[in-house]
Amino acid sequence: MIRTRALTCLVVLVLTGCSSSSPTETSAGPSPTPPPTATPTTTPLSLDDAAQAIVGQLGDDASANVLVLVNQDLYDPLAPELATLEEDMRNEAWHPVSSIMPTTTAEELRGFLHSIYAHKPFAGVFLVGTFPYAESSAYLDQGADWAGPADHYLMDLDGTWTDANKDGIYDALSDGAGDRKPEIFIGRLNAEHVDIFNESEVDLMKDYFDRDHAYRTGNLSAQDAAIYATYAHHHYGRYEATSATWSQNEIDSIVGLTAETYAFVFDDEAGSDEWPTEFWNVSSSDERSEVIAQQEFITLMSDGYTYLSIGIHGWHEGWGGLFTNVDVLSVLDSGGQLPLFVSSSSCSTGDIALENDIGSTLTLGGSLIFFGFAVPSEITWEEIVVYNEALADLPVGPALLETQTYSISVDSAPIPSSVNWILLGDPTLRVGVSTAS
Image 1 (cartoon, rainbow, N blue to C red):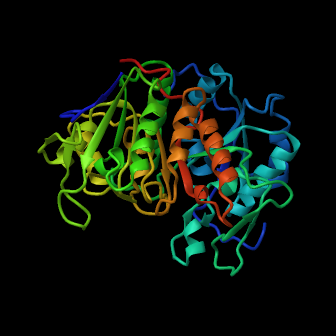
Image 2: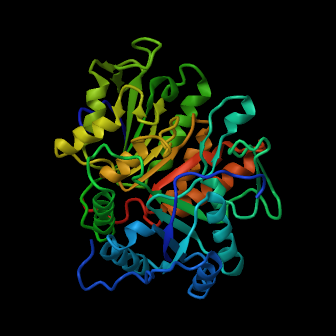
């Protein structure tokens, strides 16, 4: 049921990684759970030896093979949680494989993944801890100095990426020996720049994996409902008539993911032209409830919904005037529960390069998945619809893969805008199937 209303509440691979790259042209489980399949050694394997070892352990079903790459410093402290993760993956027909290997750049990581895939294909990778990323942005074509993490670089294993002026930022992607479409999915769990909780990286990771296991086993309570949040001008087509159609398409695309679907719409014509600090909730184009929307939105973010799809002006710390990384602390301090799965088509909310980015803060603070954009947004409404619809049948990683495949196929720019999509959290999770209400 859809209600438009004003809400008053609403594979384990151990890897030594680093946080950045310099591209060159082209290129808690129960105690009886067995330990992860990786066996750490004092002397890490070379890249070639590690790749060869992994190939020998991969199964014949490429769609089931998944690598969970864990930063070497986290492997021992997280051993019980990683063992539980492996067991949960196997119970859902995934095939995890393990090894230890060193890497220092995104280029080495991509080359390593390519060498494995060329011998034995796999579905995707879950990066746990600090790992390198490439930088790019479609805005470079417009002369703007906006570049950020671009995980499509790791997902596309056979395209050719170039950095024409050798400034460390990729500015073109061509077919090369293959095409520009992705072969694998990438999900990240990264606490490198998150210090807002005053907790150690290990403790934040342990908490995340405890939630992951609780969700998969039906022991994480959440409201079996999805929320769609956007501005009134988009939902009602005030500035462009077609936006009303796409707003309804977005709502329709999340119907069925959970038992109920709600639209949460804000009047963005009240206030100044600056980043607004106040909005009104609206339940129709003619009816307004005069409340401070920031308070309402914090309540919405505290009520434990399963899914949130949001398209509101954003930056790396949150959504304009409504909710920031600091508000995550307010939710937790008040005993509230963050939405489990978040899809944000807002500018820069997935920028993992910046301190306390809202995506990582949510994921480490209580959510399970954050799907967002790492630079000022160049997304299309169609991309969000494709992602939401894919979630009805697929885990989030394969849904990301399907979305990127669509996006690349319709975007002929030298750097397609979708390269800056970032998926945070365990990419093998599914929306809604294990929710206990």
